Length: 329
Image (cartoon, rainbow, N blue to C red):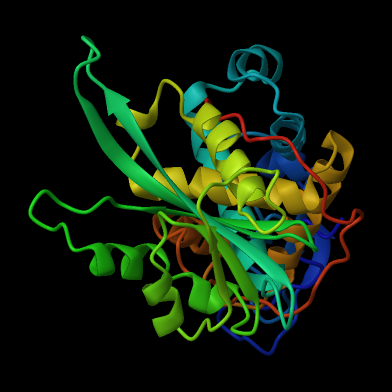
């Protein structure tokens, strides 16, 4: 599957390739069955076969991590995973964060720009918030931008901080919310949205073809009903009881996972196959940083367009409705 590097170089002599060997004491490298990378230039140095992989530095055997990936793909409940795979919740949480980072990088690498000349792109925004126990006060926690390519059935989502109490500028608010469109959407697309989105901001960004309808109802052909239905029915369910506990960064991690599943995860089997392909893609990359370091860095900034690799693994499915991430992960 390409989850391990097929070649390793000596860290002291970068041009010297290592050879795969067997350590005399199998108990020294238990998870690899004694296999280890050795070098002629530095015979006293050994390099783990897991170096540069997702299995590096793990206290668990690769088989355990593969089970975690499988259950992540199947969206098995956290309680069942902990019971069946015998890992604690904190380890599971950290490992699933790494998988969401793989999703973030894959979207940066493989998600095409949405729309194009004469193609419809629906744009919508919702606010997610928390309500006080007495139900009297509601506080907006985050605003979520949804962008849907109607023909390709591809969606992008972005979590945006709501404006502060002292900042009520309508133009400034939408300039911030709609900022990702410059990277996501072709300028020649037909943008379809409702009256809650500022048309002037879209025009100012170079989108000349903007159609606003008074309501997001499916009865109107040229409405943003599809993306608004998605934003209202799918997205809020991910954060039903935990929204107040999550930072915008973590919310974006889950949104990236959701978008990735829509593109690559129409079934548990294809989800599993495609996440393995995208992990392998990162393993193949020749980079000064380890895979774990890179993925941890991605997790701290899931909003960024990460560009690490160029090779595109073929997905097994055309984009279809996937399954929403299990936020309790």
